[in-house]
Length: 332
Ligand SMILES: Cc1cc2nc3c(=O)[nH]c(=O)nc-3n(C[C@H](O)[C@H](O)[C@H](O)COP(=O)(O)OP(=O)(O)OC[C@H]3O[C@@H](n4cnc5c(N)ncnc54)[C@H](O)[C@@H]3O)c2cc1C
Ligand code: SF4
Image 1 (cartoon, rainbow, N blue to C red):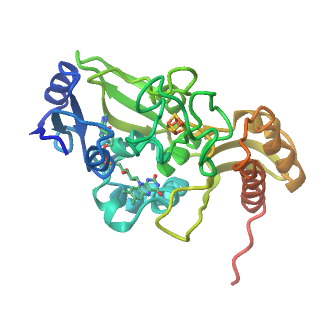
Image 2 (cartoon, protein in one colour):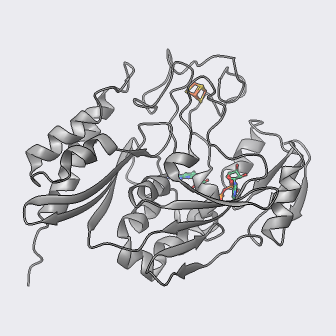
């Protein structure tokens, strides 16, 4: 690993000013992704600005019932928080489906959202990779792509975003609060935060140098049933092959509202807006769920070894929505 300097920032202003003025500086929070990338030479910052004391580590309940989650809240604390477990269980389930207990104790909300792809070529500096070295090529398209994307990808990159938390947050209509290097505050939906690769796959998101994630906001809870389901090669400690976050509201047998998001299939947590639009106001039946979710993949671009992901996502999402629509009554 290249030598680097380390500074522990005590305020958002100090952190974002330090990173904003030097292209060789970057934020570090839990370090569970960044330090791995530094060890294998994917990234070589000269200055690490630790933001754990510069951003909040609290979950605060707002007057309308929404939650403001500080960027330095650990994944473990977020999943265990009573308000999250009661009002947004899909988020607690998604976080607990990721990594291991030890990593969740250290990993933070801000770092989880900005963790980088797990594409093996990206992490191997001996291989070309358009995301790591723009213009060098994408060996995954002809090579190992079973774990990579089928929708939202481009000819230049087919990587997926690895965050489970992000999939639940996009289904919950979360908003990310950001402070710029010059002190302006703004709020972004997750769709606004992440970019699709297009012909600039080295850019994962829309943040500018020095932009600091300070918090994530969840809107007030609604009377919905929700669940996260993750399909992976091992029962634990594995990234998603595919995952589904579903939030369903019904009136009798009619869908009044639905929010659906997928992980493991796209360069960003994928909000299934096409499926949602088909479902709203329609019957809450398994057949209707399957037709709507399949429509989400009408312009998917699967590769030979990952084409199975659309059927897997359709069946997982259909079953999840059916379970939410017709919950099994608990035995008395
Ligand atoms: C073995 C292993 C298995 C894993 N399995 C899963 C899994 O199944 N699902 C899953 O979702 N994740 C998984 N992870 C990823 C893990 O959840 C992430 O590494 C972690 O969430 C990153 O958080 P961090 O605080 O350690 O980020 P860091 O590593 O410190 O930072 C990550 C990135 O975020 C930036 N950053 C950090 N904080 C901020 C901020 N406030 N504002 C702006 N930029 C910021 C950093 O500059 C860096 O680019 C796994 C990790 C490992 C090592
Ligand atoms: S899929 Fe993206 S990250 Fe993977 S090798 Fe291709 S360009 Fe690099």
